[in-house]
Amino acid sequence: MRIIVGVTGGIAAYKAVGVIRAFVLLGHDVQVIATEHALRFVGKPTLEAMSRNNVHTDLYEGVAEVRHVALGQSADLIVIAPTTANTLAKLAAGIADDLLGNTVLASRAPVVIAPAMHTEMWQNAATVANATTLASRGVHFVGPVSGQLTGNDSGVGRMADPDDIVAHALDVVGLRAEIGEVDAERRHRDLEGVAVLITAGGTREPLDPVRFIGNRSSGRQGIALASAAARRGAVVTLLAAHIEVEPPADITLVAVETTAELQARVDELAPTSDVVIMAAAVSDYRPASVSETKIKKEKTGDVLSLELIKNPDILAGLAEAARPGQLIVGFAAETAQSPDELLALGRSKLARKGCDYLVLNTVGWSTGFATESNAVTMLERAGDIVIEAQGSKLSVADEILTVLAGRLLEDQSDRS
Ligand code: CTP
Image (tube, rainbow, N blue to C red; front, side):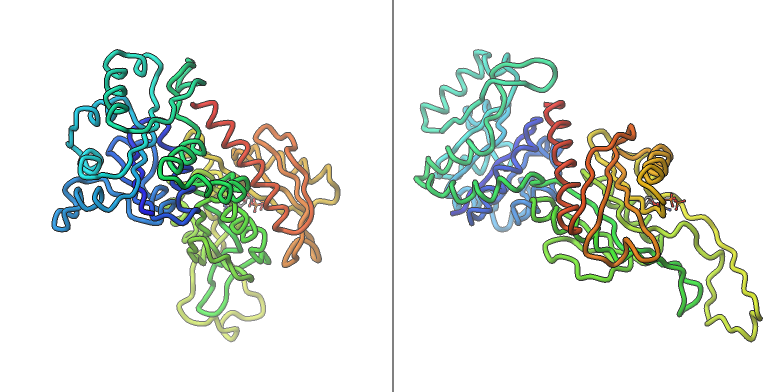
């Protein structure tokens, strides 16, 4: 079935991601039409990744193929979630000043509306009249429900739960039975639509065309985090310095070599990420100069001294520039002799870096690298232990992600 999901400009726009994802998981072709205002609340790349289609916004794009009519004519179902008071009014009046308005007018498909607005707006006589008009024309309403609204107030106006919107919409077209299938899958998808940037592996700093300064990181823990996050519904970008294992297929992979390259890619990708996990072992220094030709010992003699220059601290920079709600996670592998020493080293590193979480583990000549298992202690910003996890790198990854998913949920409900 071809489903058009209209997304309009309200705080609840981020929840549209759950609606889109559920339809996609059920095998439907989802075309998202987002208003300009909606894109201030939820990113186009997120909507595109979730719907697996381009997002349509502009009435004047695709004019040659008469898109404003084509989308509406080809739809089997239109779901608008959230629907603002403004969109509700425009739909009631048949106004077509944007792509969504045109599409609804040009369609014979059933329309399901999930309003989201403040109680006063929902109860305003104008909105009541508009909703009544639409309902009398056969438009289906799901919600709004009562609950906490944006700001400190609560009351009726909150958008219905995405699961209920999907259930109701499928009911309208007689497909409710499909929902059971998606439920089982969604229970495990607590990072649905979350943009996660993970760095993994070890950076290498070239000395000459054949040699480099590197480290023993294999990238296994970072890759396990990428696999687990993708399985839980996250949109994952893996920035891989030198890695020794195959990365998962369902992520975006970006390969880097040096710390400077890693820094440039992090600068580019971090601003649009909800979570950044710095699992890479980053070279703290780079050679002051790189020889264009192979360094020859006839020239360098018995002792070769290298001049090294300190690299920028990427994690500290990320923590400083983090936007509200964004989670920054660091890793620290230490050669500690005891759990107490590990904790002390971790706490002072956490204070220096200023990140939200630091995941600590012990390394040594024969432990920590290139193994399939790990034992970590995860600290939160104030230095308290959040979890101690041990087992396969994948199970450790899952425990770390459970903490992050829980925190994102808390932050989200604080905001809505
Ligand atoms: N890190 C970073 N940039 C650097 C060095 C490290 O972003 N130049 C990040 C790593 O990816 C990791 C965390 O910082 O998430 C801790 O790395 P670590 O090498 O343990 O920290 P350092 O600050 O280099 O401290 P140390 O002196 O112990 O090496």
